[in-house]
Image (cartoon, rainbow over all chains, first blue to last red; front, side):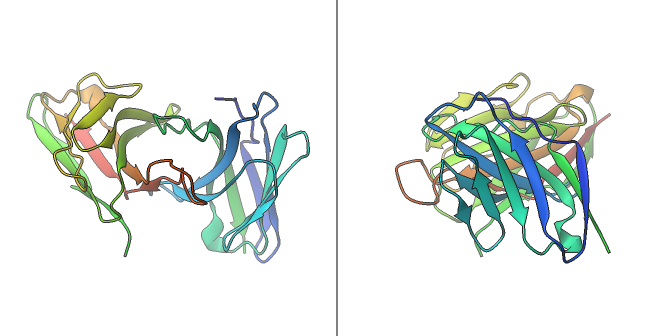
Amino acid sequence: DAKTTQPPSMDCAEGRAANLPCNHSTISGNEYVYWYRQIHSQGPQYIIHGLKNNETNEMASLIITEDRKSSTLILPHATLRDTAVYYCIVRARMDSSYKLIFGSGTRLLVRP
Amino acid sequence: EAQVTQNPRYLITVTGKKLTVTCSQNMNHEYMSWYRQDPGLGLRQIYYSMNVEVTDKGDVPEGYKVSRKEKRNFPLILESPSPNQTSLYFCASSIRLAGGARTGELFFGEGSRLTVL
């Protein structure tokens, strides 16, 4: 699976958009970009995933660059409850082990 | 409510005393897995199971056993726990990748914090 690079920490103001970047320059054609988050020491929570098109769901939007070497997770109106560690993971969809390699992630702090 | 349930959530035990951490999911998922999380090392996969009676080692299987006798349950067994198994453990499940919009999404339990003295 391709390696990902994320900034160790970010902060944003409550109510504003949080834009979390991720670099995955070695991504291959069959690899998806997944985002999870972990609030404190709870179980990681799936947010969104995509292959090459931008994706949106009730939690967030995922913007993937045309060359697929980087992506951005957007939380449109961040709340205090969005304070968490956010993990960007690249993985082949048909990987039979289903293993997700969680790196260090980005620690997002949402300020009141 | 769709969920993955782990028990116990917290446990302090002593070296060598066998213990089992249970994991149960109510989503009829074929795939289940165990991870451990340690500071500075992130989450590492211990064992996984693609279906009933099918299990395989992850990255750090030493000192652990699993079984998958029923689809919903995937217990993690520590036959002789040691202090280096002190960790935060997560069970996860997923529908098998066979097409569909939401395949590949892992559902995690709330975690079991284990301390081995």
